[in-house]
Image (tube, rainbow, N blue to C red):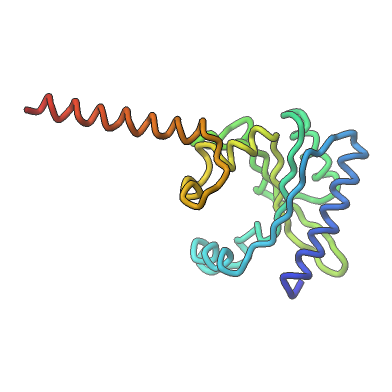
Length: 177
């Protein structure tokens, strides 16, 4: 794949095949999103991986949103039936969430498209997991400054934590006097 546009087109083919196979398996997909990593994001990743592009496995990605946890694992099975997974790149953050509460299944697979073999990362999760990842504690909080649609319950919770911290610090200063 040479151009960004060609990668987008290849990802659309993978998306259509994925949707068809998930439907054949009886799985209802709420949403499927595609992403091709932009140059600046690739540059930042390369800096993390000693400028070795072979260590960057998420240049292209699909996010699959399904109804429940059982469907997450079933969808993972369908993806692995379609394409061979990259060894060591299957992550189960549902059974073992990240410390910040993030949950999702991740896998990177080899997808033959036209004359190329692409590595594509799949993220499979429920709608609740997706909302928590996008807007919850696991999200990037700088989006609040840009007017995102973060549910007010999350913002209120963080403000409450900040208030408690402020009270505790004030109490500690009073005790030092």
